[in-house]
Image (tube, rainbow, N blue to C red; front, side, top):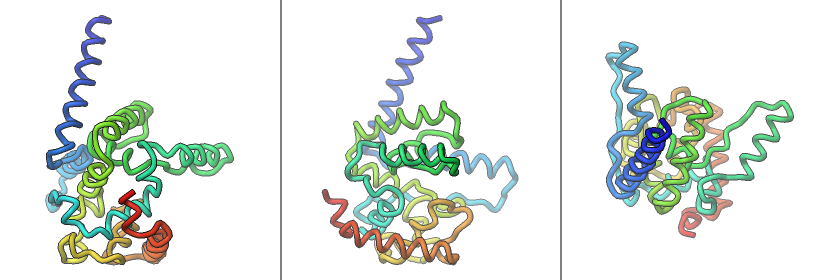
Length: 226
């Protein structure tokens, strides 16, 4: 029994490392979250549902979008090694004080979760998320993590990645996005099924304005060159 368990563990580690190494260089055609959403649509009889995603190299994406996403989701992205320990500690302290437990996931964690795992909040899934986060931080450069995130993040129901989002919401290529449009896309990420970048609610407008201010405070695009 123990021998088989050990073999399964070794096989899982070897296979996961192989997948991570492949996706360091190869375009990501599909993520686990995309597959889950597609299966939900099939199972729920959503005949009109169409999943949209086109892989786009980061060099073909406006530099306004990556910095907007970092400003919105993970301002320490160039500095940490996958986990924002301070944000995790603050979130736990807030929970101890009776406040609602807020997320403290970095872009690296979100990339690992969206690419390889299922949705949910179980300890098993969180443990797997931490494992894959360590792997991609160890085996991918930061620029690659951000490139994959740009291509698999959900910006609307069935709309994944910068290319699909820029065409769906602004009728343009991702390379033509301006700072305001990039901030609007970043602003919907907390709940892309509820909010729309092309028809922004008051909340989205306020959050987009806040993101633009944060981009300026970080030093603009050059912040990601460090």
